[in-house]
Length: 305
Image (cartoon, rainbow, N blue to C red):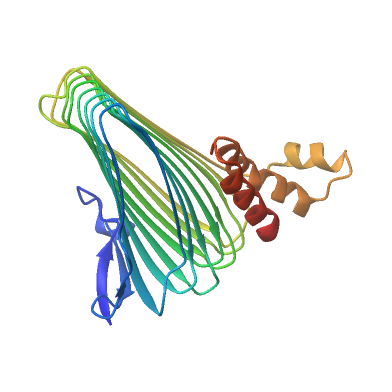
């Protein structure tokens, strides 16, 4: 059994914060290699790829590769449900004027660990859209890295999570701006119940030459457990003068006014908490664009709440 470091920040912060990376026990040598899945879209083509994976054996890993040539469009739906310990690497390459949309349901059984590693690059006027929903009762480690190489390339990321009991939700998302007039938007929202622990690291890095680029990141966290632990780490790095980067976070509890509103309508505290906890994920579920996966997300919410 090895101890590996996952979800590392591009630039370390104060060690005492405990957010520079996460040490994780993982059996890399005996991890079972699952069949790789590939999707290649020729110039101007539209393609859809569906991936359903729960893993095999104690440790397993899978690679998904998506290439979108100039002017093409690819939509990828990944239904990942870890029964034990599962690693899925998803590699995206969007060419000039190409578009890739990745929708992930990251779900875990109790006691299981799911690692999702997403890497993506965009050519000129290319774009990647990431929609992630994190549910289940086990631990989730999501590490996403994107490179906006071409001028006017873009990333849009929407993440939703529900942490409960003693679950760990560990998220790292980094965007490197290299091209001019590139754009990144990162939005994360979720709820933490019981003694759940969550880290969200969001990094926007403006490299030399990325003039006139814009990046923003925002997170909204609802704290619903007295023992829940939240760490939000927004990071903006800049080596270029003419750029615009913004970040913000809203972290709060169920306040007395909101609770009174619910109680005045006959809704008790636990029911009110469940309504608010599912709001951010339900919003993303409606934006999935695939009825089957949308229903799985809603069913998962109904099961957990």
